[in-house]
Length: 484
Image 1: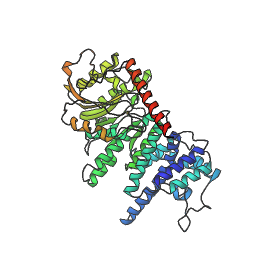
Image 2 (image 1 turned 90 degrees about the horizontal axis):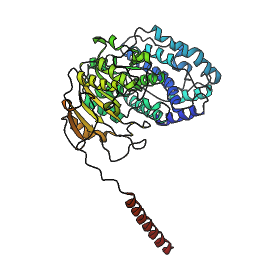
Image 3 (image 1 turned 180 degrees about the vertical axis):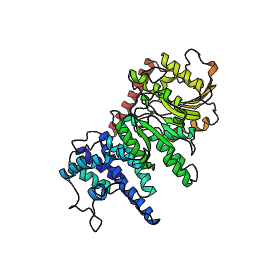
Image 4 (image 1 turned 90 degrees about the vertical axis):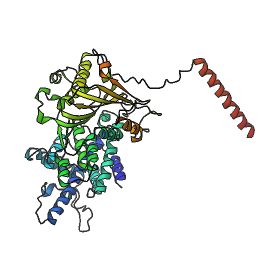
């Protein structure tokens, strides 16, 4: 049911003049979905309060509650078409009254880790792009069919939302940067192995895939106490995101996964001067996939000791600085990080090797990131002691990865087994830091154990094979013609 509802909503938005792409569909679905979620959350809280004999005070004023403006019901529990706004009346209410009202919550909230603050921030970051009030009415009616009351419903909804984010990435434009393949994220988390009580941070949060998967991992890590659950809700997950759409999607994704008021801030992480980061600002775990190929302005570069316009290189400096001593990280980065010869890249590798134990490098095949024609590696490191030895694993698959043939967890199973003991195999090997070039700190992933591939055939051999195939095809065709 949920899947069909989402498809129907996309079909409605496709017809609307204000929505031109998959990115718009996700954004507009998100804000309506959020308000429906808020309605169900308030109903749950009111019921819980009633059971304990306490009074519950609604977050939203009566006229702005979902069951007043979006989906008023008649005595039979069906949509009251006489009371429900539609057309221009609905569009005007949403644009002129609802959004300005919701924006005010940000200034009035007591702290950033409250649902009130999230309401204000989300509705300060976006606008209603659905131009037709009739299309908006259809979208609202579809979303009103959805329920967020049970764990199973929330679980299914979060998976469908993930699918929409994935499709958004596949749709082109800059959507691909929002989506890291979930099998890869789950594998990274298993290696880093966070524990309840750790603080977990992603400074390039995107759709919050790392934080959502880490939340699921910890929720299933043991039998949780009430204190554990409060810790996971309030004091575990932290993120920063520069782009408005990604911020909204990341926040919504975490909420659908079960984090009521995500600690995600809409800000440019790289605008923070590294020298201002103090011990209280640091985190136990870093999980991230910073943007590929971005360029930062000169004034942003001034915040970093190693000057470079490459966004990912600036993020790496940020991560090393903001990771607590003894803390652990899993970071996806372009594989050129291992071998680039420019001064900044050399200095950055030196910084990482001297300040952290870079114990594992996972070398990923091309096509891991759908729509992004770059090869990547995952760096696993712990802060506090210099690197002595780096273990490499080269993921060699017997197929090409792509949109219809994506990376899966089974592909990474061998890596997980060998990584526990840094075992050597046809796909894995180790390098002692004392043996690498101390001028370049080159860490190129050159597999000494990989079997030599068969030499390419000569053109003459290829032509001979083609001729043989043609003759075989002709013989088959003649035999068929004889039968006719």
